Image (cartoon, rainbow, N blue to C red):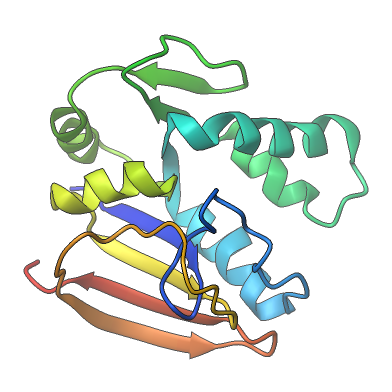
Length: 189
C-alpha cells in the first residue's frame, strides 16, 4: 500500500504560517544538501501530490510561472516536476482548478485518500494548507511526517495539530542553513 507523506515547513514554535498564512519566516538561503532533500529525494519518491483548495491558486501560479517564463531560475527543474506531477485538489466548493495536471476531488476525504493509497504506484505527497492537513491528521491518514523546522519563532499563527498526537522520530538532520528536517511516523502505525 502506498504511503501518504506530509512535507511541511514549520517555525521553531510549531506554526506552519503566520496568522494570515504569511511565510516570510522561511529560510531564504538554503544549502545544497537541504535543497536536494526536498527537490530530489522526497519528490522523486512520489507520483501524486494532494493539497487543499485554499493554497492551490498561489501554488499553481508560482510554479507554472517559473516553468513558462523563467528557464534560467535555479528552481526550474523542481518547478517542472511540480507542474508535471498529477495533482489532486480537495474541495467542497469548486469543481475545476486552472493549471496543468490537476483534478479536483469533491468526494469524502477519508474514502478518497484510502482509495488512492490502495492504488499501485509510488507514494503520495501532501503539501497543505493548514486546515486540509489538519483534516488528514484528525482522520489518521498520514503515514509519514517530514517537518522542515526553520530557525524562527513567530509566537502565533496557523497550526496543524488540534490535540495530542503521538509521533515516533525516524530521523533528524540539521543543515548548514539552520533548518532541521525531522521525519516521523505515527506512533500507532
